[in-house]
Length: 261
Ligand SMILES: NC(=O)c1ccc[n+]([C@@H]2O[C@H](COP(=O)([O-])OP(=O)(O)OC[C@H]3O[C@@H](n4cnc5c(N)ncnc54)[C@H](OP(=O)(O)O)[C@@H]3O)[C@@H](O)[C@H]2O)c1
Image 1 (cartoon, helix red, strand yellow):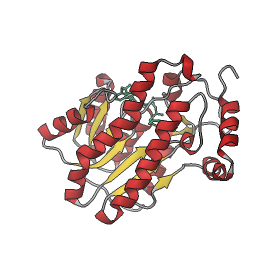
Image 2 (cartoon, rainbow, N blue to C red; image 1 turned 30 degrees about the vertical axis):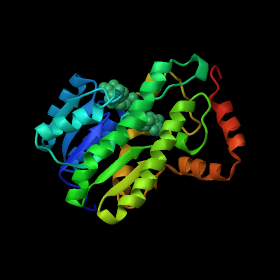
Image 3 (cartoon, rainbow, N blue to C red; image 1 turned 45 degrees about the horizontal axis):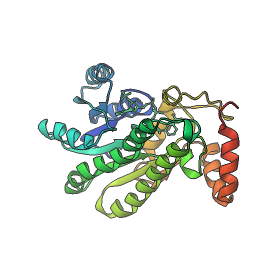
Image 4 (cartoon, protein in one colour; image 1 turned 135 degrees about the vertical axis):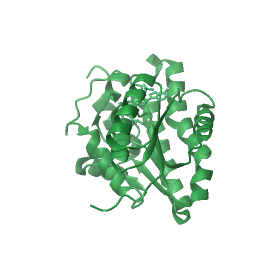
């Protein structure tokens, strides 16, 4: 197996469940020290103890709500206070809202944009100077196959994921000659707590992928390409939609996820 080229400390947001927890587990297995960020302090504490014991690494936790103004500044202060230098930033935390726009709670939508879009930008600003100083490391952004076309009933969520997809690909080009790897990871339906939080019961045609498989592939492709859509079916969907007129893509996506279907 090829040696993992990233070392030092990885900061993973949304590490208390789903893909973020899996990033933490697999990075720990590869010997990286960790900073785990999410709101659920108990879950982070339990995961930190387990990974420290199992892999002999150092794991710090920062219990924080990333949907509030200046959250990233607080996290940077916490890692600075511990004397930590981050070499891999995994901007994973994210939630989705589902339903007709007029039925969705304005504040919940606002918080989702803060969490899904503002936090990754702010955290990148906080940690990029350290990465550049080290001339090494990486940043991962969580897009989605929802990023590849308009997504009626997931309208704001899909737009936040398109934001991350484009942000990551643009930074890949900006940073590739500076020794910093950037990857936009765009999973399809993956078995996590996402569906519960979004209060949606999805039944995707090809079933769900497992988080461990998605994360394994992402860590393998980090530094090798700017963007990754895990799975042949998902890749085909993301590719083929590029040749479909956008109005038609929006109508099709709307038919598939209409509430009450
Ligand atoms: N699952 C899928 O099908 C799928 C597909 C494509 C993309 N994605 C993306 O994958 C990423 C991870 O989602 P997941 O599927 O693993 O869902 P998940 O199991 O629900 O995990 C979400 C994580 O985000 C954290 N989080 C939520 N709100 C937060 C807040 N305000 N502040 C800090 N942390 C917060 C949660 O921790 P706390 O509740 O403890 O704060 C949790 O650790 C998201 O960006 C999502 O858009 C998921």
